[in-house]
Amino acid sequence: MIDLTPLDVRKKKGDFRRVMRGYDPEAVDNFLDEVVARMEELVRENQANTGKVAQMAEAIADYRERERAMNDALVSAQQLREGMREQAQREADLVLREARSEGERIVSDAKRQVTFALEALRRVQGQRVRFLRLFRALVERQLGEISEEEERTAALGRLDAEVDRAGIDDGEG
Image (cartoon, rainbow, N blue to C red):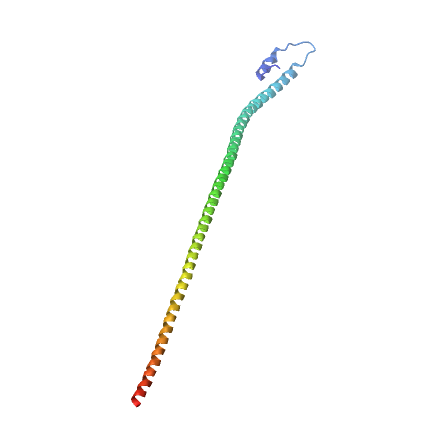
């Protein structure tokens, strides 16, 4: 393709030879004027479009850079989310293990306390049984002593009655 400018077409106006039975010079000149005008318009449009293309190429480059940055951010966010999920899972597992361990310790302590309480209860029940036996023995001894005292008192009362009767009998006679 030949690079033609509107100026090249203008200069060409006078270069055509005149021949017999050739084209009408005025029609050729008018056509060339139209071609120049249209070429100038096309050159301006081309320059404007070239600027727009450059702007659009720059905008596309910016958008692609933003897209790349957004993709990178998205990947980073996904990795961060996955890392946080894994960390949360590890922390939950740790808390669960600690809670189970603490629960087992509490249950073990409770069982130990129950064992101690049962042993203490058995000791107290044994002491109670011994106390009741001793108390029964004491009460029975006391009852025996009370019975003996009652018998002595009764014997003394009989003795006094006999003495009274004997004294009354001795004094009468």
